[in-house]
Amino acid sequence: MEINNLESCLILLSRQKLVCVQSDLMPADLEQLRRWRLILGGDAQAPLDQMAGGPGGCTLGGGDAEMDAALAAIYDEVPEDDEEGGSSRKRSAGLGASAPRLAKWLGDIRSYFKEDVVSVIQADAIERKGLTQLLFEPETLKSVQPNIQLVGTLMALKGRIPERTKETARMVVAAVVEEVKKKLEQRLRQAVLGALNRKEHSPLPSAAAIDWKWTIGRNLKNYNPAVGTIVPEKVYFYSRAQRSGAWTVIVDMDQSGSMADSVVYGAVCGAIFSSLPALNTRVVVFDTEVVDLTEKCGNDPVEMLFGVQLGGGTDINKSVGYCEQFIKDPRKTLFILITDLFEGGNEAQLVRRLGEMAASGVKAMCLLALSDAGSPCYDEGLARKLAALGIPCFACTPARLPDLVEGALRGADLTKLAAQTEPKK
Image 1 (cartoon, rainbow, N blue to C red):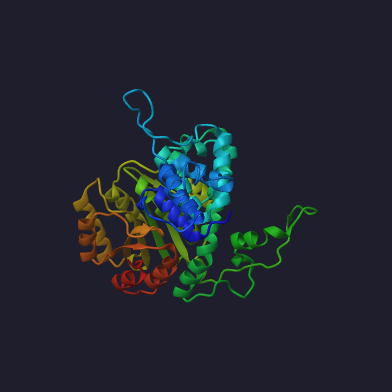
Image 2 (cartoon, rainbow, N blue to C red):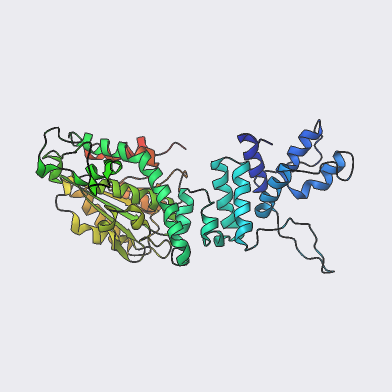
């Protein structure tokens, strides 16, 4: 049986208890009853049977039953015992702790729903049932749909992931990172180099100006086993201007649990910035402590993500104080602070630091979220204080980040740029 995308959403929304449908509706035929049964779940079995003419009139079979069981494992309510020790409400079997059962469940939902719906169901499985166990078995983790939210969960659990699963977890994270890079890398490179009015690579060959990292990366397919080396099809050269490190870009990221999506996107963007010789890039993460990931981000953004530990408190002021040492030429420094601004440290000092930074000529901005998730929750009072200093605070989707960076490097007004870049509500 095929389920279209609209029906998938209706089924999922109802199972999540976000909609309510009256049980006394009178559908025209058994096909409509079957669809309502999938939407409403097991609690609607008896009234729908009655509407279909009696017991068993709306029984699901085949693929319908498998789809219903997969959804029931996550969305059916746990029964409460009545006074006589029985169950007051029937419930389908849960997933349990068995890795094979989890693997079958994952296979079922991927068979019946599209990728975006599968991602929502997986997230609900972890949130509603605490099924972090599904991330601890390599065989099961391989079946999970890789997405940004899953990477965030793995980052939060990285200290608890068994040794046998770590390599699989790394593969999942790498798959998501590669997907994000495909979407962002070319546009970010073009935005930065276009803003600095540089060509991407010089057409004039010079051994001293070879871009080894870019050349090797683009010629890995040309590895020759006979000679044990890469035989490049094309060699890329930096222009002199590109090697000057004209701008400093500092990406300072809050690694509290609520910022998971933003950290993933921010880390990948930091790695892309680091690959550009025209930029001197620093990537820093913080909770109550500060961790500089700069050395890792240029070589392996996946390794950098595994250096993040989601959760804990938040000391933004401490992190901003650490980043100040990297500002050599304020008028050629872009400071991107990614945080929801719920400060646990010295807020007054934080406002002073950022105010002085902006007054010195630093292009400073606060991304309350770098994700596709919509409007974030944030400290509105602190955001207003920073905005009054000329430091815009706004949410930004990854797709709009290249335009934001290009505008900042070109010297555009950040407040106006923020208004153009923030997702429409």
